[in-house]
Length: 126
Figure 1 (tube, one colour):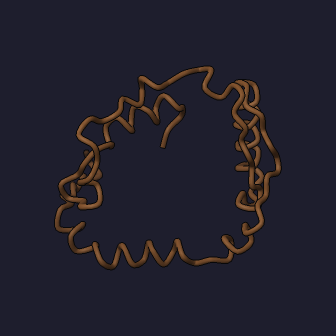
Figure 2: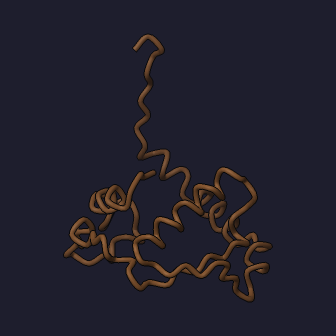
């Protein structure tokens, strides 16, 4: 979705806060943070970042891009702990809990979501 942390901060400024169509967000604080104000090029200096490789997968291009990102973080002052596996990682990998939550959420909310989406049709000729 984003090319940089600055892009993420900008998007967060637009999507943060309560959404009248999403009851779970209505308890958000009235004063919203400005994520772009928190951008700091020295933010990673001294931070330890653990890399649980078990979740990474096996696609060479993705691993290369991920490793390049780790190197950038290292250059910005982060301490990279690689690998940093944890005891229940295999249990998490075997779990289908995330998929179950997504399927349940879409089943419960699909009609409400579709009722509020306005589809735009674009013809091939422009």
